[in-house]
Length: 265
Image 1 (spheres, one colour):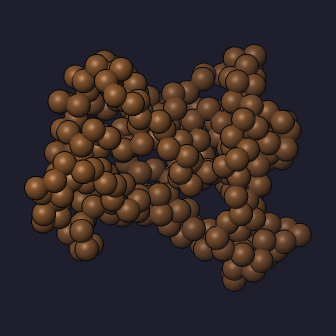
Image 2 (image 1 turned 180 degrees about the vertical axis):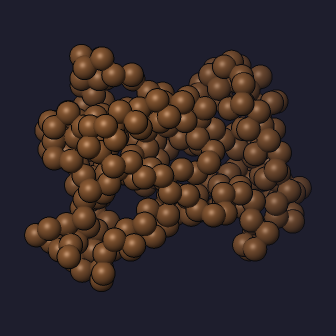
């Protein structure tokens, strides 16, 4: 039985630089192995993320790290059964105005937190305090993103911070061990993408850009009286990326709780 003295150890595996480094360190016995490395797949990740996961999951398994992928059974960006229907924290413009607001963020809880916690509940009898240790890929340079879990049975831990390892250190460690350095993980249509990242996704083209444009179109009229967009300019994605990068103030990547171990890690 799992308890605070014998916790179920879950490594939240986003397949980005930091969480991949944690998983690889566990595989090479530089840190204790988790009970499971759990990837909450939104089904909307970058193509490079899926390629990286397919290549390196067998390697982790061969080195004793059990990898599990979980999903919410409803991965759609627009939900007919929700009030408002939109999952993303998209940019909203009310009809007849030029002011752009932002919708409530529901994607992290819906696509990341819920599936992981449902998996956890399959492996614990009762949610006792600190009976689950959640290992999160937050590095030393991101220490400000550390936070306690919002439930008592989960204790968040930050091995990279404890060892004073930065994101740059992770990259150096991966290269030294002959392991691939992955792209930054995250949904292809994430509204928190910077203007520069949107242009990068556009320039790479392929399925990532197609999916981003498709999601942008799908959310446009998901709620009467509003138009929704994934780009901060409140314009259709194909149009917004043509704006010069130095036009007005650059969008800054938001420091959202989503970054604290469930997305972009």
